[in-house]
Image (cartoon, rainbow, N blue to C red; front, side):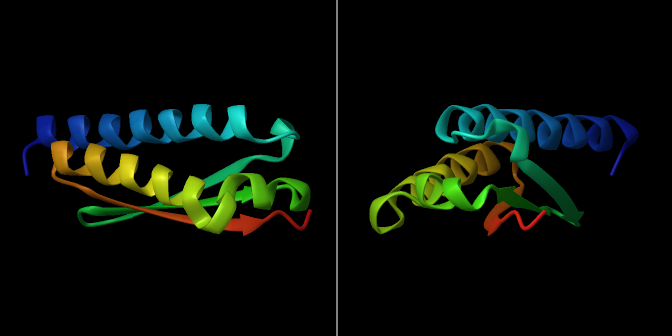
Length: 94
């Protein structure tokens, strides 16, 4: 992989993280408790999202529809970038 590909790949992950953060901040009632941890291994990036206990149900949505929609968006972005994105949602216990 060339240096240009590595740089554009990291920009892609950063841009995707920013997109995810914007979506999450519009959903939650306590935006200060939104945390996104990013772990990239090879061509797969996992976003581990932590939100306030009150906001977990908002992020998951009815029957998981909201989180499923976010995963579909990440999947579409990943197809375009030839990169796989995984979204995990956890309750923030801090």
